[in-house]
Amino acid sequence: MNTKILITIAGNLVADPELTIGESGTPHAKLRVAVNQRIQNPDGTWRDGEPVFHNVSAFRMLAENAASSLKKGDPVMVSGELEFRAYDKDGERREARRIIADTIGPDLRFGTATYQRAARPVVESEAVVEATGPEATTATGWPVYNVSTKGPVVTSPFGGVLTNDMTM
Image (cartoon, rainbow, N blue to C red):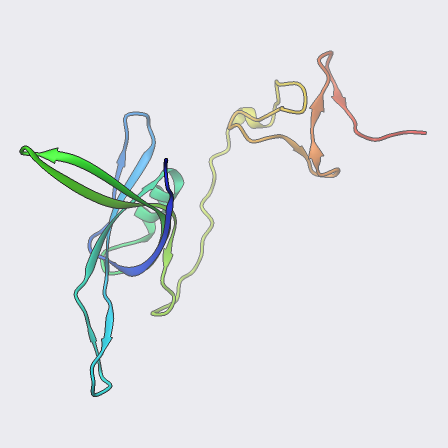
C-alpha cells in the first residue's frame, strides 16, 4: 500500500539549487531547505530553535525555474509529497527522506517578488494536427481545442474538420 504524505514547509535555502539532466533528458533540481522553529522564552522574547534540514527534489520545468530563480539564503515555501526510502551503506541499514516538490515559491512574508511567466518552447508541428477523432493531440501530447467553440477539434478520417454544430 502506497501512502502519500503531503507536506508544506517554509524555510531558507542552504545552498544554490543544483540542476542536473538525467539519462532520460529530464531536468532534476536538488534543493536543501532549513526550517527553524521559533520558540518564545518565558520573558516573552523569541529565539530560533534547532534547524531541521529537508532535501527537496524538483523535476522538469519546476526544476529549471527553481534553479534559475532561487539562490542560497532565499526564503522559500515548498509543497509536495514526502518520500521515505531505505538503503544499505557499509553494511548498515539507513533511512532517508526527501520532498518531491509540486510547487516551490518565494516566501513573501520577508520580501517582494516579481513573477515572470517562463516561455514555453513552441514545437513546429503543434500547428498541424495529423491525428483523427476526439483524441487528437499536438506533438507535445496536449489535446487540440477550438477556441471559438471551446471544444475539441475533431478531424474526419477522410480529411477536413468535423463540426459539432447542429443545423435544422
